[in-house]
Amino acid sequence: MAIHHRPCRWLMHTRPMGWWLRCVLPKLHLPTRGVPMAVRAEGKLLLRPGSILLSLSPLGLSSIFTWGWDHAALCVGHEANVVSIAEMTGRGFGLVSWNRLCDKARRVLILECDDFDAEYRVSVAEACLRIGWKQPKYDHQAEAGDDKLTCAELPIAADFEGRLDIEPLTERLTGNRTYWPQQLLDADNVSVAWDSAWKLHGKVKA
Image 1 (cartoon, helix red, strand yellow):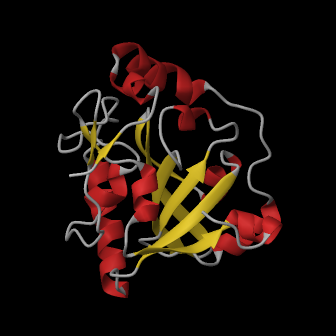
Image 2 (tube, one colour; image 1 turned 180 degrees about the horizontal axis):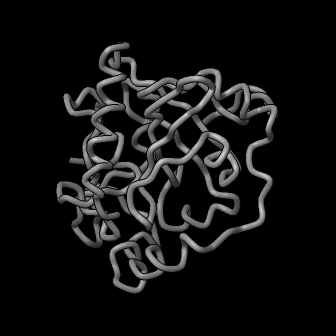
């Protein structure tokens, strides 16, 4: 099993950091214009139930404790020009709009799993909503396999047949088995369908 380590990430597993993520970060609103409206409109057209989303926060605060992308979410509905996106935050499970997700990010990716057919995509979205009905708590300890979830674990948990080719990483300092958003991008059977940076900077590496 892969072992991964980054300086400062051990803080994610401490009680003070758990309190900060649960009580402070959800109320912390950094000034940002987010992804430009013209750019996000292009991405919205490509969203489908089962699309996986990755985002970077405005100042990359979460990246201090993770490597790569710092937030993951899952599209669970796109009807009549209304997009519903499921995510796990310090407040727990919630549904947000595409615009709300883009407002909070400086860059967004839309990912597609090559092994998700049309029927299974809908099933994954439905499974994600069923998970939400149970009101799971956010996993501040980032320990894979328990009944709590991080943002990266939500799409993985909704993939009930395990078609995403992802295994948890083992932290060197804590021994915790953890999923991180970057792993969704790095999976062998996942590809980038859209990157908000493409329209502004051309095709750049995700």
